[in-house]
Length: 208
Ligand code: SF4
Ligand code: SF4
Ligand code: FES
Image (cartoon, rainbow, N blue to C red; front, side, top):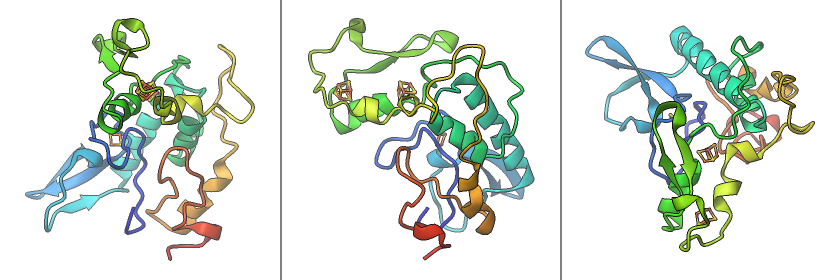
């Protein structure tokens, strides 16, 4: 981001441990002449490393990841916006209307920022979910509400939540892709919940 190369991401939160959950941030890491697709948020930067963030292969894979994500949670405006910005125009998968995409933002914020440990993952595979211990308000919960603020599911589509069976890819925010087209390889997506005038691109201008 510092260099104007913004790679789409969802589970990454600056300052929190990265867990590579959403896989939106995939890149090609060229090592010993071979290309390995990996999540960039979990990749340690090293001198001389070669990374390709916007190849046809990455764009195709990222498009599919974003499409699956928006099919899982069409009622998140944040995820709708990410999908549109990743080039998704039509969703081929059935909408599931889930209320959690297991990004782990809430769990890590609770544990690492507030040291409350009031949230955690339980279960495996398709039964995996976020819960409070014993499904009750944990006595150590500091009621900071940060887990709610940082959750992509709390930002609903502009027209309100979509009803089951009536979900669609919104795409109304597509105009906000303009910057991406004008400045190849860059993206105005910085942090969940922050607007498109993120400072770096304020006033629809290219890199300062
Ligand atoms: S409100 Fe409670 S559960 Fe949520 S982040 Fe704060 S301490 Fe954790
Ligand atoms: S509740 Fe929200 S922040 Fe927490 S894992 Fe699920 S989608 Fe992510
Ligand atoms: S931001 Fe890297 S895997 Fe989610």
